[in-house]
Image (cartoon, rainbow, N blue to C red; front, side, top):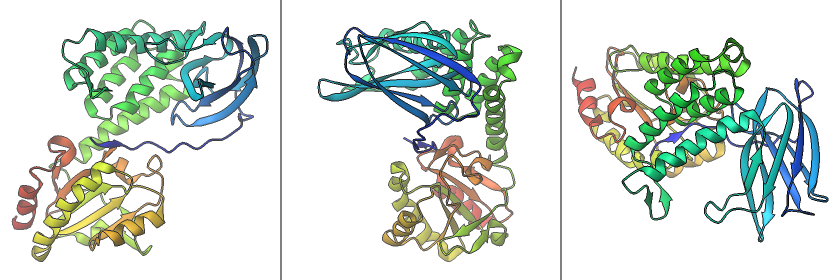
Length: 372
């Protein structure tokens, strides 16, 4: 399974003074009296925490007032239950939110949360649609106790959720959910479906900050995937190598080479590494070069990785967190590992994302790149 390029969690324990939307959270509980409850509010784009608050429940209730940067934000509650931390995610709206939180039901082992927030209602309905589809699916969806969604079922759920979103064209919760869907599935077909649904939303939603970001993100994904497809000229980029010297793939003009997008933290990348090293050893005498791109900002771990694995090819990195790196996005790479083969004319002749994530046919294209 490939790893989506998502940012690491960075807790920023304050709400920015530039927030525009005020909220009131009227919290009630029957079972967590005198307990300490934590409230985390998340950035809708990166899903990283932007604020954290805590309070002690007195007489089964508590009121929190604050500000949001958007009309609604993803948030969660967490509390200690039976000696363990347990939580549940919800949508916090601007304006008044009446929320009740109690001990988990036995089936889900999740906290029981009820909210009158419109954004929460929409997102909760879409999540319940997922659970309904899974429950009705004829084939087993759990392997060794873990939920496993077959591709056919996943597509059925996605289409059902997109259709349901048409019922809420004016609700910010719809935009939140659509953005979340875009984060889970980074492929051109899904991006096109998302843009179709986005177009049905109100002008207010489409012109909101989140709406504009979603449109730009999905449009760029589609365009960049096309640009990095087989048959296109390889984009030229500049980047620093392991010694912090500048490198450009333009220096390999007239030579066959592979671009490998990887990261030290990526398990599937490490599984493919021995095969790539073997192919390099076989074909480097015939002129094959490898540009091995590390998509992470941990330089020490990267250097150790190169040394421990004796990677003698061209090792490069932007030295940025995955969410901030630009070169992978310019190649339409939103999950790793991804490999491209470039021939002597500077044309991409193979992109593993398109049809061969397991690299079963990459050697055939390496031979073509060398011989033609």
